[in-house]
Image 1: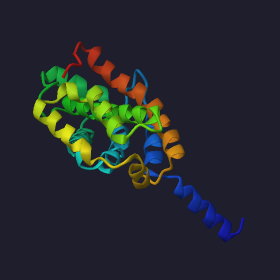
Image 2: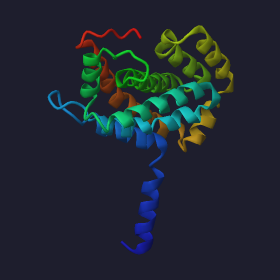
Image 3: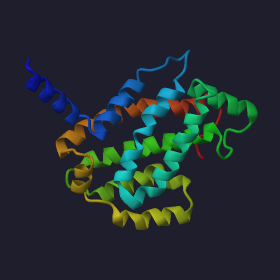
Length: 214
């Protein structure tokens, strides 16, 4: 292949690497990491999770609270990865110290990051449910399912008001450099890869007799 052909091929390949593509690929790779005996590497988990913040940013003011909290918690886990190798390690350390639910503990941060991943999963599922389903309806339903039960009345009220500022479905796709068809393919990939990961994190707590209602 000549130089022009090589250049064109690279350009086309790069064009497919939209934020949704990068996120879907990262979580697919993460789902292949770790074993029951070795645990899930915390640094690789943080690398994948750090990519998700671009989605919250694309949703604007309505999800600014989620973006700020999510980015902060992932940052805390990045710091924790300098001391702990796996997700299991941080939960076990907090269990031993009696700090699982303490503010800024790695186990609490992991719980909140897991909630962020699940919020994106729920949002994508709602987005896929109907082409005529508005982003506002999709986001409202996803928030009600995943986050609302754990937020105060004041936060829920602020989020509800912010839903009016969400971009349209078309505007979101434009921000993410996707078509409706291409976005759906990548959303399905993320949903498929993230579900077992979310379950995996839940089981870390359940297996240590820690409830999930917090």
